[in-house]
Image 1: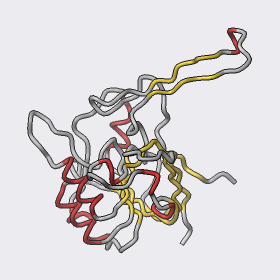
Image 2 (image 1 turned 30 degrees about the vertical axis):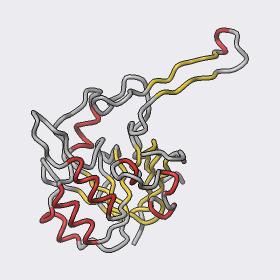
Image 3 (image 1 turned 135 degrees about the horizontal axis):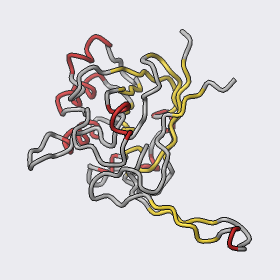
Length: 217
């Protein structure tokens, strides 16, 4: 019985990308329909497109790349926590969940139901503020996943909301980051997670395929 839930965002031409990042482009180089022997395509994209993982190297000088990610960071038991706050993932909403050291935590927010419905970048999405990032670091969680393109907020009108700081706090604490999940059809609860990024030497991040399977407790 197939009870895996795919929480990845499909990669395709025209999909949403972070402002300024290289868009995803798949271009046919050979086509059977044009009497070539096979279909062969070329892919060009940002390392942080769609569902992807961030490496410490993304925001920390001299840090390790995505190839150094321990397999245990993104394979194993994970908890999906549904966030009600429409603006940010704040510490008071997390405290009742009693996050434990080594946990893999995926946050389901309004992003999953709204942000992925359009190919236009959404500047206002639910994110992790620096204060919450410090709380997650203090709790010693192993992996954090969010349901839009960044754990941190987007800088609007010249106002910095801590996007870069959130990344640095999490990565300095040894927390691995999964971004770009779609949790619209996932209920809160305990799951088995498999999320593997491409093993790119020196990569600051890499696209990933992520799936969940409900755990029966």
